[in-house]
Length: 479
Image (cartoon, rainbow, N blue to C red; front, top):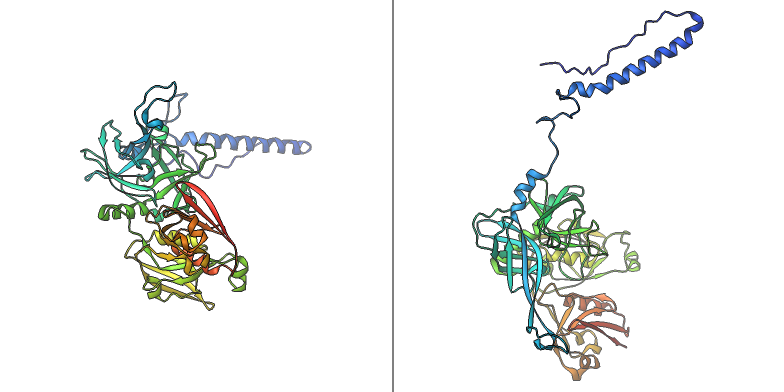
C-alpha cells in the first residue's frame, strides 16, 4: 500500500544556531517563532498533499469528491407525486338572473380545488390524498409528472383523518413504498413534495420537528408528524418522504398566521394512512374501534385528593358500557386510565384520539390505577356503535331531548335526533338536527361525554349549553 504524503506525526524541527550567552534569550525567542511558523506551514499544505492533483486555480474534481445531493432520491420519488384538481359547483345568488346593472350568469359556477396526491399502488392505480382536496368534487383530475391528465374516481374518503383514496386507469405509473412511520424520530431528515400554490411540483427539505401531535382541530382523530419542511397551500395530499425515498406521511395542514409557511407543517403518518386505505378498500368507509368507556378529566384539586402524582394522568372512568370490551376486560368505574398500548395519556381527549385510531379486531392493552395499584388489562377492539341518550334521565331540565352520537366522526358535538317540545322549555327552543357542542364550556363529541358531564354536575348548578344550527352557534342557559 502506498504511503500517504501526509505524516500523521510531524517531524521534529531543530534550530541549529550558535549564540553567545548574553544573547541567549533573544535567540531562543527567535528560534521558537521559527518553529511555530514552520509547523503552521506544514499543516496548511497537508490537505493538498492528500488530495489528487488538479490544475492550477481549480478545486479537485472527480468521483472521489461527489457533491451531496437529494437529486438521486427525488428522481425516484417525484414521478409518484401527482397534482389534483377538483371542480365543485357553487350556486349563484338570484338563481343566475342578473343583479341590477350586472350581466346574466349561469345559475351555477365551478370552484376549483387544487392539491396533491401520492400513487401508492401502480398496478391498481390507487392514489392517496386529503379529504379536503376532493371534498364535494364532482369532477376530479389527476395530472402526472409526465403531463398526462387522468380522470379519477373516489373509492372512499374519511373526514376524521382527512384522507381519501382515488383510483385512476393508466399504464406506466410509478408508486412510492410505504415506510414504518412508527420508527420516525425527532431530528430525522424528511422531504416534502407537492404542488404549492398551483405553481407545479416542488420539493422542500427539513427535519421531523415533533411526532404524535394532536389537539390541532376541534374534531377528528389526530396523530400528526410535525415538520419544518416547507408545506404551502396546494401541497395538501402530497408526499412526506425519508431519505430512502419511502413515504412516511401525507402532507395535510400548516400552522400559519399569514397564510404562508412559517416552518410548522403537519402530515398524517403512513401507518395511519395504510390502515385507513385498507378499510376504504374493503368496506368503502373506516370502521372505528370502541372500548366502551365513559371518562372524565379530574381537576387538579380532585387529583391531589386522590394522591395522584403531579403531571400524571387525570382520566377517571365514570362509566363502563354493558357488553363492551372494557366491561369484558374488567375495567371498573373509578379506575384512573394511565396508558393505552403502552402510550401514556393525560386527558380524556388524548385517550379518545388513540382509541379512534385502533385497528378494528386488534388487541389493546389498557393500564389503569385502582386502589393505588396498577393493573394492565387486555381488550379486544370492537366496532363502535352509536350511543343514544334521553337527556331528561340525567337532568329534568332537559326532558324531551334525545341525543345520539354523530354519524360523521369528523363532526363536532352530539346530534339531537328526537324532540318533544311540550316536555321542557329547553326542548321547545331546539330543533331536530341541532348539534350540542358543549356543556358549561366543556366540549362534547359523543353521548358518553354528555352522560359524564351531567352525572358530575352539582345539584341545581346552572347549565350553559352551546348548540350549532346550520353553521350558526347559539346558547341556552338553564337555571
